Amino acid sequence: MDTKLITEVTEWLKTTDLAEFCYEKDGDCIEVKTAEALPEPAHFSCSLTAVTAPAIGTYHAADKGKNLVLKEGQSVKEGDVLGLVQTVSKKHPITAPVSGKLRVVTAQEGAPVEFGLPLFFIEK
Image 1 (cartoon, one colour):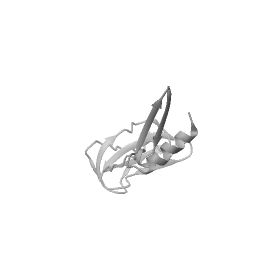
Image 2 (cartoon, rainbow, N blue to C red; image 1 turned 135 degrees about the vertical axis):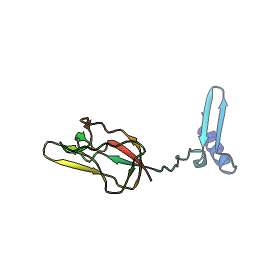
Image 3 (cartoon, rainbow, N blue to C red; image 1 turned 45 degrees about the vertical axis):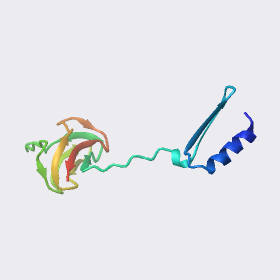
């Protein structure tokens, strides 16, 4: 395809309000898109706050001998202990970062967890 034609089409496109243009002739095709034609990233809001594992280890709802049962719909306050992650050398507490209701509980007693794995979702 002729580069002169591509330049002319590009310059012409700048003078219009078109966001994209496709030209096809003799089996050749050019497609030109302006910045306005690019998709805009999705913006959304969510009322859920993820509570993630603070370390790699094993999730436990409570220390041995204690009982902590967390259910979806249950109210929690900022700072409430939601369980712990046991590593080889330490117990890492999991605390609620915000007050609200537990909407999703993915944590399972005795399950291995990775750092950053969402264990709970709290609705503010």
